[in-house]
Amino acid sequence: MQAGGRERPERNALEILRFVVEDEAISDADLSGALAAIVAEACAEAGRWLCTSVKMWNPDERVRSLVAAMADLRADFVVRESDSIASLLWLGDDSVSTVEWVANEKFEWC
Image (tube, rainbow, N blue to C red; front, top):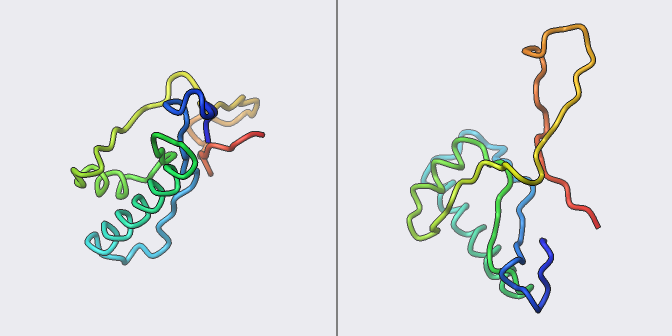
């Protein structure tokens, strides 16, 4: 969670750091229902911790499209430009185009 505490709750956010759909055969309807339930629970938990928003880190394209179709969620998709930006220093001899990002995830620090 981001820190704003009781004094600045608008800065508090509950972050879903990793969301994976393991069963790719799940229907869009079932996945949409599951996403709605997960987000509802995350929102309830966020409220208990004085968080004013819920953020999901780097959802895959299918999850993004299903969430975008859920008008009641009022979801915004943001490209990170100022914080938690993944970086890589490449010192290898191979082409940069052969690099594959694995686990592009956000990690929380205490």
